Amino acid sequence: MEKMVVKQGEAKTVTFTVRDALGAGVDLSGAALLLGVKKDKSEADYTFAKADQEFDKSQAANGIVSVNLSAADTNQPEATYIGELKCAWAGPVIKKSEDFFLQVKRAVTA
Image 1 (cartoon, rainbow, N blue to C red):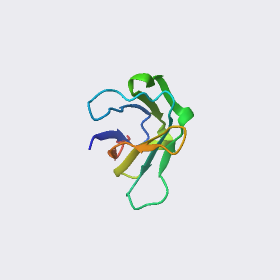
Image 2 (cartoon, rainbow, N blue to C red):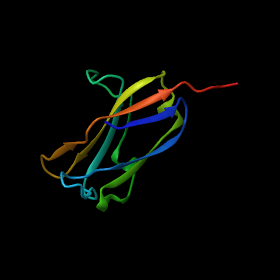
Image 3 (cartoon, rainbow, N blue to C red):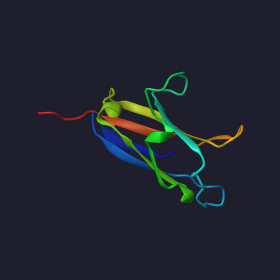
Image 4 (cartoon, rainbow, N blue to C red):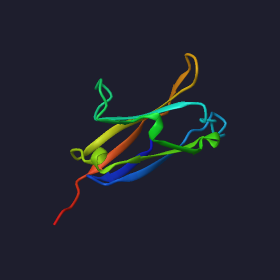
């Protein structure tokens, strides 16, 4: 699992590359995306989430998408969170990426 690190209250753009089993980028241009982040897998609700319209899909045909995490998104208690990227296509097809870790570190303030 990949681990991303942010500071509390830090705005940051995160980029995801979704690949198939052969390592080729999966065409995401027709997919609806959802990024969900929560403290523990067992929690029903996300701590924060990003909906499809918040993603930059300019490279989606190559499997590359990015999304901005706002200062409010990352202004969470210091901990390691679990994130997932869900990709849904027309019909009953929904795929979930491998989970990743998002570590929020305490921000140092003067």
